[in-house]
Amino acid sequence: MPNYNGPRSEQTVICMQGITKNFSRVVANDHIDLEVKAGEIRALLGENGAGKSTLMNILYGLYKPDEGEMFFRGKKVSIRSPKDAINLGVFMVHQHFMLVRSMTVTENIILGLGTSKRLFFDLDEAEKKVLKLSQKYGLKVDPQAKIERLSVGERQRVEILKALYRKAEILILDEPTSVLTPPEIKELMTVLKKIASERSAVIIFVTHKLPEVMAISDRVTVLRAGKVIATMETKHTNEEQLAEKMVGRKVLFRLERKPVEKGKVILEIKEVEALNDRGLPALKKVSFAVREGEILGIAGAAGNGQKELREVITGLRCATGGEFVINGQDMTKSCPAEIIESGVCHIPEDREMSLVMDFSVAENLILEIHHKPPFSYGWFLPFQNNWFLDHKKIAEFANGIISEYNIATPSINTRSRKLSGGNIQKLITGRELCRNPKLLIVSQPTMGLDVGATEYIRQIMMKQRAAGTAILLISEDLDEIVMMSDRIAVMYEGEIVGIVPTEKAKIEDIGLMMAGAKRMIPKNDQ
Image 1 (cartoon, rainbow, N blue to C red):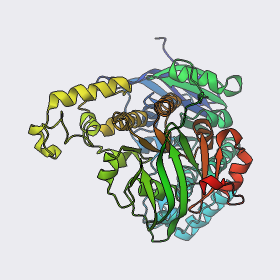
Image 2: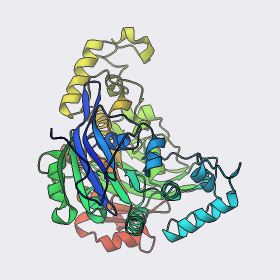
Image 3: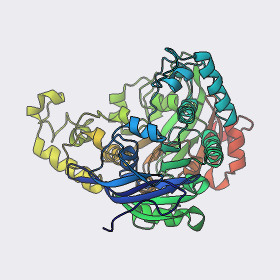
């Protein structure tokens, strides 16, 4: 490798050269070069596990590289801790926010700052400065509000304000839109563009979402398996090219929904009512049906009863009125175990809800069937009595699922929490589908997944549809609902306000129904 003598441009703020990081036998970063200029928004793009977060954790001082050098404005630097990074003007907004929930916005922003002029901070002065920054950059937030009372989007604004308060020159955002609503994402992009242009700051936008890369970045660097595949100007590329570089093959952005003959009704919901966690009405006389070989998509903004609907059907929440029938059997008052035995499989949006994260991959794959032959000699026993379990049969089963669903894991004994989001989703999907469900309930199936994993999960769902499974798809991604569903039901304030065949659905009508401004329910669906 040629000797590096600093950045190639006076405008270069940060330059990373030959960065390599190994975790045991896994090479997370393999001789990566990255050079970013002042006022630039650089997208760092790659699949889950490509090495994006590791590289940024090195820049922020959380990891020490095994090889490589870093230069800040042409001067070689050693970043051994986040304190070193912050002193250089580097600030990172993590995917999981680093805020003290019981403290106020201003207290979080000034936390850790020292002063030699006075013993205590002037909190009023700090609040005024925070307010001024929030108004200047459109980061609307109350400086006196406690973090625990803020929405997810507001908490992210606090993290960005914390960086601005510290006069950060390099702002790293790790998967910043994974927990935001579409309006919040649009607002965030406007703010970041303003910060980059007015402060000549460097913004490194770590993501796997292609539309966001195209909308916000000046240049994009693609990582795959820990290596830089390409760096290019965003205006000279497109989503298809970037996806191919990310995954190493062409990616299908549109799936063909082939005609499938619809069979008998598997799920029938009849005027179901339920309360939310605060004891308020969440479902109001909800009625619909799903047939064999059909995907019914439930569209709607978050918080309109989708969560409660899913929990009622899976036995996790009691209905206060109405009834629901699964495969001809009334299951309204059934427990989750009875509903599972009736042929229902459930893939929730909260992946940790579906797994025991400290259990191994193999243990999680047999969670719902560990008490049955051939895994337990017919005994109903908890895992701690594992001397009655047939480990050879479990290993054969687990290796089969791992192979069939292409789950990337070091071994069947790896703790599930060590897998990437996409592989966790494949693990859950493989476990549920191996039981050949009559009814599959899927909530936010591709949330947080990269393009390769998203394509894979959607193809699996289409195979289940072709096999005659009735599928209830709950998603806030309207494009996903339209692409996958045979019919679309729209929820608003706990009611089904519209059910339309996908081929006749208009996005404008769906938007009006989601806002409660229109109703479109055929008589036979009432």
